[in-house]
Amino acid sequence: MNRFSGHFLSNCDALPRRSVTSTVPDSRQLTTLSIAEPGLAISLDLATLSAVWHREGARSLLALGLRAGSFGTRSSAEASELIAALAADAASALLRLRGGWVLLFVDESRKRCLLAADRAATRPPCFASLPDRFVFGLTALDVASCDERLDRVRPQAIFDYLRSHFIPAPATMFDGVERLLPGEYVEVDRGTFTRAKYWSPRYDVPRGPLDFDARSAEFRQLLEASVRSEADGAASGAFLSGGTDSSTIAGMLGRVTGAPAKTYSIGFDAAGFDEMAYARIAAKHFGTAHHEYYVTPGDLVQGIPEVATAYDQPFGNSSALPAYYCARLGRADGVTKMLGGDGGDELFGGNTRYARQKLFDAYSQVPAWLQSAGAPLLHSAVARSIPLLRKAGSYVEQARVPMPARLQTYNLLMHVGADQLLTPEFLEAVDPSSPAQEELRYYETCPSDALVNRMLYFDWKYTLADNDLPKVVGTCNLAGVATGFPMLNEELAAFANRLPVAEKVRGLQLRHFFKAALRDFLPPQIIAKKKHGFGLPFGMWLVSHEPLRRFAFGTLDALRSRGIVRARFFDELLTTRLDEHPSYYGELVWIMMMLEQWLQAHRPGYVYRA
Image (cartoon, rainbow, N blue to C red; front, side, top):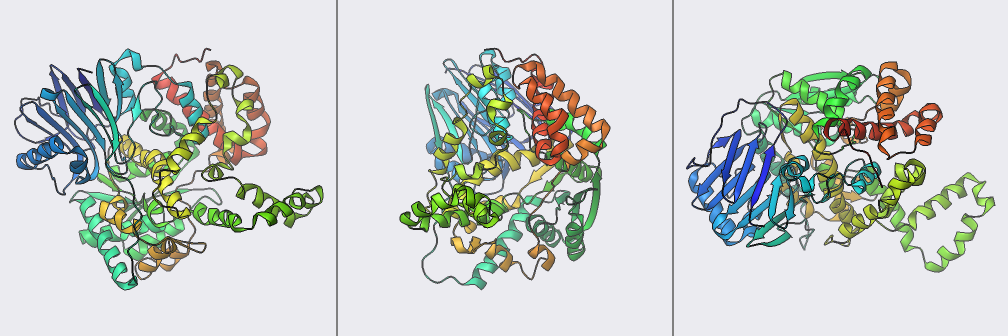
């Protein structure tokens, strides 16, 4: 690996661009950067990240998205300090950085290259380590385009996507191209490749009595400071779903700016899906300058191709469409940065499955002899005919599945059956057990034995870094606005991780400490509401809106020819199953439709052949 090359690209044109070269002696803000020198080639083209380039002799530093901290990199002196720290001890230097950042450090004299992601992998860079070359970039597409040896679609990645609705890191869509995990870096030093963590969540609860009032005051100070830091004087707005996290961010944004916060909400004219009433409660309570938009089926027909093709690999989170229209609403209103509440669930225990899995975990406390004695009864024909016993049998069946596999109890692909959905030739080329093995491997690296902490740790990667953050970052980038996530503030995350488990999920009550500490700040209706977010009534609209139906069916018809999905399954899905269960099978239509839209844009000729 005697050469380093890569691309750092983004899809939006939010800011005017100007070119600079590696001859620039000092740190400066960039939107375009081109470097072509022996041993190092970089092409950078972005608009929604603040980038700094600094060079000292043979050492080069490219830092994107850094927030002021121990190293602000706002001046040559600070950049020089960071370069020296990276040269001496990379892990310690990275630990001092703040923000949603990506970092590249190159020392040509040592043939050393270091690539790193922030603690939440807000924009995880990708890389490939080849025998003669180390290739890097902001996206998997960028890296694959650097070398024809990397431009091969992985069948396993398609399977993983159909199972999870995204491709879990470190894997990507392309053979040989990998993505960094939260708090991770890779380094090439004189041909030796190293991949390591410089940070991982820790759950060290302080000893001794805990003073609620003092901790509550500290928590609110950290929240306010994190929102102030993310707003950073920009024309900031905030997503507002009406949940606890987005409402908290909206309220704090008004407090730190001294003006009504600009807030943006998405609604749906569909029973059971519209949460606008809660957004209005929060907006009125905090006196925000509130903006609303109701997404229509026609918006999906227009927006699906834009959103599906904006990502570097297939991405099937249906909430991306509402997030995109919400970001567009802010952009049209002059907002240059949108603040999201993402991360609150993964820090303070806000997901309903945390309480549900505690119920299932209680079964492990039942004596083994009683479990054995009760199993035949609960699985008998008589028990299946009695509703209460049938529920008890279902409970036991799920409770006996170990974590984290239990989280996949209702996995759509597993319920449909991979052998029913996929062609035999395609299924032969993948390992259906691989995703579960990777999930277990990651789950077991958690440094805590407590179930809730282990689920929070698991979701820090699989829900937040792999799913929620790409949803918001990708759609905001497409709309032409930057993003900020105050809940991911390093000090706030450390504070949350120090909370006792019962302060996160007390009994079956979610977010116990969070809600108690903000009881006099948030509206009582927001404190009491159940989590929902920007859910999308796609299945309902799919059977009732003819243009959307034609669009979706036409997309799936194109997928037929790629050798991935059985033609017979398409026929059953589109003629009978979808009309019988629109919401359930609508989700399957969505993820396959987004896959085909992505393939049409980025790999139109792809056909699986054994």
